[in-house]
Amino acid sequence: REIGESNPNITFKLRGDVDLVCQRQTVRKALDEKPSDTKMNVCLVTGDPDQIVRLHAPIRGVRDAQTSGANVVSFNLDAFRSYGKEKGSNAPVGQRAAFAYTTALNHLLGRGSLQKLQVGDTTTVFWADRDVELENEFAMFFDEPPKDDPDRGTRAVAALMQAAQQGVAPILDDRTRFFVLGLAPNAARIAIRFSQVGTVAEMARRILKHFEDIKIATPPDPPFLSVSCLLRATAQPSHKWPGGDPEKIPPNLGGEVTRAILAGLPYPDTLVQGALRRIRAEHQVTYPRAAILKACLNRKRDPKEKEMNVSLDKENSSPGYRLGRLFAVLERVQEEANPRINATIRDRFYGAASSTPGTVFSNLMRLKNHHLAKLENRGRRVNLENLIGEIVNGLPPEFPPHLSLADQGRFAIGYYHQRMDKSTYTKQGE
Image (cartoon, rainbow, N blue to C red; front, side, top):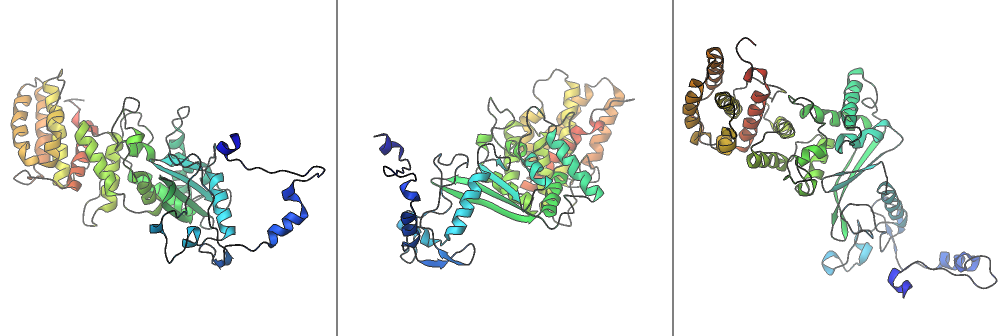
């Protein structure tokens, strides 16, 4: 009964023999000479003639896949077959290649492996042709920093920037190849989300470019923005994860973002949409969300468009950006006029102001006059009026009836930049 339930591998030896039956010379010779029921064919991986594997070994260690293992290559229904072929013959992989890739993947995905990380729903493994420092640091750029050393990722990025400035490894390593493979569960199979190959130098430059793209004005003691942190900023919060629950990150997003970083491509539109969706739902333009929007807009911008700066850009004439700045100043006027207020215009009007500004800004501008009249400090009132006038002078005569998705992103960045800028809070004489 136990054998039937556990389905173990069993061997035996004959009484009086020292070796197992499978180790006897006659048995080994017979097995070697036994004609294979699989015909020789060209292996799709190596291009060489080889015996094609009928069933591939299972891969273990991919999160949310079957614990007993799942297959990269498998065909179990007639709809998956072609030209009357069965099982592995539909994707002919030779014995040597099949053994090599399954053994290597199971090693990289093994428990305690330092060459795997989790990005959203994508289990990612990475390796190089030889031992390089980037192998040791790669996971720091994408995964959450350890709780006992939260500054570890920050130090890794600083070291990478210093290497670029000094022109030393890994920036100069144009010979060693670096491989990254993203795997995700798909029922009893494993889906290949992305596969990226490049030199160590190429990978290092693209990772560095990503961190330059997401760089934006920061609050005091900003958290390290790993890729996992950015993804969580697009997810619904939970009691355990107030900054975004990893289990609620949109499917495929982790793999798409990682591929965009490693290939130097524009970030996926779903990343922008996720950030804007959470901003509208929570009325909070957080540091990670502002960083996401800046990076996404800059990578997809038209060459004629102005690039989004790290901090406040008073020369940016984009209506979306200026409306965001204006909304931030109007909110600050309300806060100073009513110091004990619990809910500001952001809580009531952010969604409409960022998408259909024409419907709310005229009313907000009238409301602003009432708030300014309540300020006792005349110098501060003049400062705020001048700031509002400087922003409004760069806007069209009529508030736009609606803003595109890209302009909604610019609105959020303008709001964030203005809120982070000292001039929004500095009073007369300070």
